[in-house]
Length: 168
Image (spheres, rainbow, N blue to C red):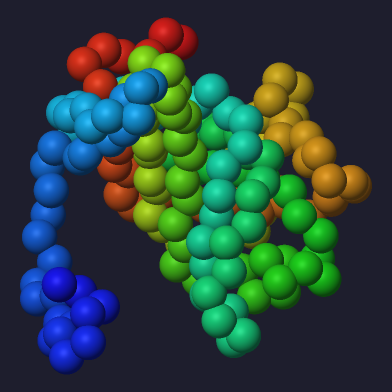
C-alpha cells in the first residue's frame, strides 16, 4: 500500500508509453474513451487559417518562453506583431519555434490541436506577408504592437479527439 510505513515507493516509472486512445472524464465524471485522429495537412491549414489567438514557444538566453499572441496566416507563414524590446522581439529572429492552436469542447468530449514547427523571421518590405494588411492583419489585444514577425513552418501537424469534426 503506497504511503504505508515500510512500503517501497517506486520512483522510476519506466519508459513513457504512447497512448493512442486518451482517457477522458465524461460529463458525469466517469471515464470516457475517445479516439485520436491525425489531421491531414489540408485540415491543419484550414484550422490555422481561421486566425485568432495561439501560443508561440521559443528559447531565449534566459530559457524557454511561451507567449500567447494574435496571428494571421499567409501561405505557409504565421504572422504576428510584438514590440521590439520584448523577449520575442529581442531574441526571436532566427530561432526555431513552435506555434500551437487548439479548441476543446468539454460537453461533446471533442477537440483539435494544430502545431507548426519552423524558424522565426522578420518580414522584408517585399515579403508576401504584407498581403494580409487589407484583410486580416493580426490585431493585438494587449496594446500597440508595431514589430511584425513571422513563423514560416517546415512541419505542420494536428490531431482531433472525438468522432466528429467540430463545425467551422
